[in-house]
Structures are given as C-alpha cells and as structure tokens.
Image 1: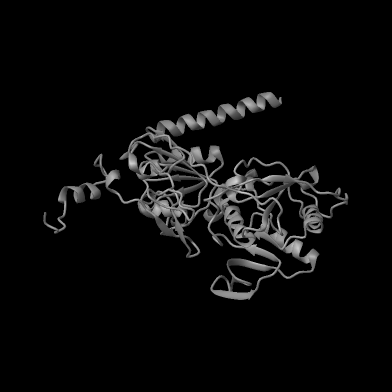
Image 2: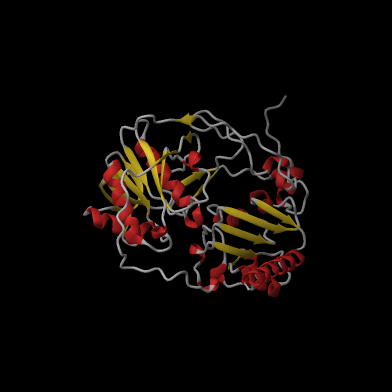
Length: 406
C-alpha cells in the first residue's frame, strides 16, 4: 500500500458546508484554548484526554454523536478519594458563592489552594449562610465550615470579618485565599487583611515556590513578591480540581461569635436596568443570533426575564444590536451564570467567548449545530414561538405570585 496521504475532497466540502447533515461530525474537537488572562485551558471532557492520575475523561459534549439531537448517557467515572485524616496545616478559602453556588473563579481559587495544601495539608472552605452547592467534593474541599446566622445575610462585611477572625484564631491556617473579584471577595479580603494588620497579595495569578506574581499597572505589568499569608487570587490563577474527590468533612467553631451592632445596614437589593450592566459582569445574558427573525419579540422576552441582552457577530454586523453587545473572542468574554443563546449556531469564536459560563441554554432549529452540543439545556423549534411561550409562562408565574400575595 502506498504511504502517500491523499485528500478527500468530499470530506473537505462537507466540513465547509454548515448545512450538510454530516458537517458537525467533520469538525475537530477543541482540546485547548487560551483564556482571557492568557492561560491555556484544557478541555477535560475531550475524547482521549488522559488526566494526571491516568484517568480517561468521558466525552459529554455530544461531538461523537455526529450531530445527534440527544446526548447519550455517559458513565460517571469514580474519581479517587483524597483523604487527610490529620492535617498538618490548613489552607483556608472563602469562596464568593454567588447565588449559593461555586463560580468558575471560586473553583480556580480552590485549585490554587489544593496546590498549596499538597498531600499533608487540608483545604478548609468557609461559607456564610445557606448554600445550594453539592459539588464541594469534586472542587477540592477537604473540610467545610458553614457560618450560619441572619447577621451574615446580604451585605455584611463587618460581621463576616468578625467570623473570619474567629476561624483564624481556631485553625491558624498557613494561608488565606479569597477571589479578587467584584462579587465581594476583593472587598472582604482587604477588610480582613486590615483587621489582621497584614499586607495581602492582590490579583495573584501565579505562585512559584515561596513567591507569587500579581497583576499591576492596570493589568499591564506583573509584580513579584514573597508569598504572604493572605492571598487575593485572580481568575484562572490555577486549574480547577478535576482528577480527585475529597471528603468535605464538616467542622464547627469551638466558640460562639460575639454579637455586635454593625455600623453598616443593608437596605436590600436595588433594581438595576439590565441594559446598564456591562457584558463582562452580567450574571444572566439573553443573546440573539442569525436565527432571530422577530427582534421586537426578542427584546420583549429579555425584558420579561430581566436579562442583559447580547448578540452574535452576525447579528451585530447586520445592525440588529450594538457593537458593545457582541459576545465572543472578537467581542466580549462573558462569565454569566446563565447564558441563553437564541438562534446562534455556535461559531468557534462565540463558543470561546462563553467558555466560562456556568449554564448554557440553546434555542435553535438545527439539532446538530455546535451550540446545541455546548448547551446544558436545548430547545429545538422556531424561536418566535418559543419566545412567545416563554413570555406567557413568565407573566402567568408573576400573576400567580401576585394573587398569592394578595
């Protein structure tokens, strides 16, 4: 047999033709991509990806189904259990827990804490109030401390600092890690550092031995300094834990927290126009693409849901949305907790831009498009009919809530 590699013109034509039924099967699976901070991220769900412990990951993207509408059930891999019966020291992490769940930033910080803890230390996560998270075990948490009480509800930095001081006195951790974010971790970490009279390392994105590197100069320069006890870590500071599961043993404070009158009073949430929220900070994005035929209905659905509007590059180029609403590698990288894609096929640049979103919902006519494979929930059908049904469901829910309140 000849060793000459021959081209397949038909396969190349199918790979270029997005309307062909076999187009999705001809697309290569993306194994890695560059994150917004320049760190190369790996697709741990890619076919054939072997983790550090020799565990082969399972393809949950649907790419191997040749564009099938439904994903096949994947067998869950039983990850090895990492136990620390008698920790030599603690690495304490205070995640933001926006919405009561771990964010991608929180998981990155836990991954960094796991690196600092090694095999002898334990990662202790400190959570305020009730939460909805049930995946602490796969995020790298060895011990979990939940500080309950109404004094921690809402915006309560003074009470939270007081609680962290009590945790610090009892466990004396080697390091404190908080996400340097706008969701509360950045401010809480600086307040906590001031109460401890310590100088924290901020916007840390890399730790090497006994030194750390943080962003400085409006993000244009790197500042290296000795590794302090209090670290405020940036997003993508480390790879999240994915190859081990942990015990998540509950721990409690040995002393009761002293009650004090706060100087700051939380008067509740203030209604904000979703259109005024920057795309990079929006938690709920309702994005439209080439498949949207009734843009007035699209705007009405976004308003009914209270979501921030976004768009694909095609919709922006066609003049239906402003340029600052464009999502993707050539637009804005978004980190929404919920991202709804209406009529967006899922070009590689767009998928890169939503790579950090927690939950993706796709509304599309094509069951084999790339966005359907990326989505956690897919709705196949005409966008206008689905949007109208969504608006009716939201109005019925709100009217029922008003009747119950009356």
